[in-house]
Amino acid sequence: MFPKMKKMEKISVIVPVYNSEAYLENCLNSIIQQTYQNLEIILVNDGSTDGSAAICQRYKIQDSRVKVYHKPNGGVGSSRNRALEAVTGDYILFVDNDDWLELDHIESLYHLLKKADADIAIGNFTQFMEEEGNFLIHVGGNDYFERVYSPFEWFQHQYDGQYNLSQCFTVPWAKLYKAELFKEIVYPTDKTVEDDYTTYKVYLQADKIVYMNRAIYLHRKRETSVTKTVNLADVYPLQSIEERMMILQLIGAPKGLIDAEIAAYKWRLAIHEEETLKHGDMEAYQQVLVKKRIKEKSFHA
Image 1 (cartoon, one colour):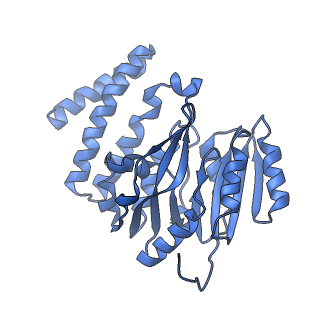
Image 2: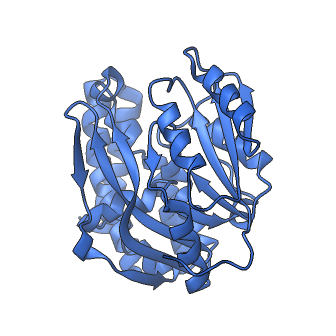
């Protein structure tokens, strides 16, 4: 399928692990069996209380490419940060501990990146709906295309619903990154959606981004008691989009990108107004009302 490689550069695969005993073996098997074999597989056990730690240790014994780090529970952001400290590869790839990969996932992204001489290669994904046992397909076989973007061009898909590109944009997985892009990157450790604060900053350090419209990653969607009762204000934070708007304006992003951020900010403000009042957080509610008044005055909306 692919031309013979002259040199197999090392790719660091990062898997934050927390209480994933039921899914972890499937995830790790899909990594170990990849057609691209020059990997270091970094597992960070984030204080799991089930059998996840034992599974990590077993794979470490079975495969010399596997490195395991155990730490007290601190969240997925802290796990990613710990893994980044241990990276020795030329490229970085993330996998969530309950997801799994098509067997040519890494090789496909690597060849795509090399062919385009890009800094980041991105693929799409298929969702597996845990409760229903069904796959939710965003990309069909006839939808394939490859495209090269500048960071600003890729930002135009941040809120694009077609092929679920909006989620592709935000998540850290289904991507191959040059390791140098993470030299100064730190994931927040006190946020529910740490990727919303982080992934776009990696894009902005790149010169060229290449995308293929092919589902090469299997993302497990689980309905748990946590997700059913989640505060949407945590899922759609204001701080991250405020910071993103500021950075994009400071670096001279096109007006269309700024306008898209403003529209998204208005949408998030409405969510925060409803959620803070519903949960009785009156201080946060008042802060949202002030931002809403400022927005209406400044943005004429």
